[in-house]
Length: 332
Figure 1 (tube, rainbow, N blue to C red):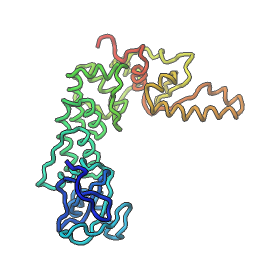
Figure 2 (cartoon, helix red, strand yellow; figure 1 turned 30 degrees about the vertical axis):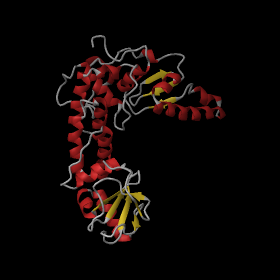
Figure 3 (cartoon, rainbow, N blue to C red; figure 1 turned 60 degrees about the vertical axis):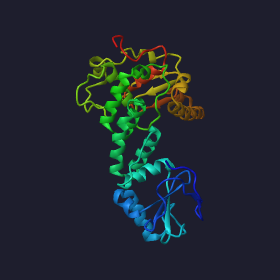
């Protein structure tokens, strides 16, 4: 993998590293990693594979200046002309894998899930379809070793087949019970790992993987007759939601379908940084209402947080947050 060794390139502040992408007579672009390693490549190759790269280089050729693209001097005797330098947000280990996927005679090796995650993010951002497909296949190989992380990544990138295989591994390793009970605090923080995906994973685990096909972790069912039907026909959740109607609650969580959950800020602060920040923001606005007439204050006794999730999903999350409740039925 690319390292931080190698000589500095004059006038660029970049190092060559120990990778295979050294300057050649035909290279015309330098990709600079976030850790300041230079990778020499061909704009024509990158443009062919990525419409994003194609747009960047087209704009650069037209104006010679485009965003963070700059001009660097010739860096070695066998490099023809100047190179465009494109500063990338990706690490050198990720760029080495990504560029290896762009050149058919180079076979990358990935031994860390973090590198595969970074490569998949970069390939998706740059819309390199062949690299996305390669990452998708390799992601399946990590399901046995990090099934929950793989499940979260699959949800983020909408890989339904990968999510299904990871979910089966989560159940086989009995990680599903750690996910569903409040003693577990290691849920991956992946964008796209939604409460809905967690709810459907819980349903999958409760049914031991025996679910109607096709079954989606990423997308909700297209039709739901009502929230009450979800409780009556698929009782994954405790039906007693009155537990979130405490008189001493200091926050109301209002769901997208109009249900109110009266909860305690001290519990939410410990459970979710995102919800805690939302409460702090609304509470600050609520406190400023002291300047308003009393009749207005009487209409809002405590802050209300409007959520984008439905009642059943919020109920599951709150059952995870409150240690005195169990999110699954007694017959699990």
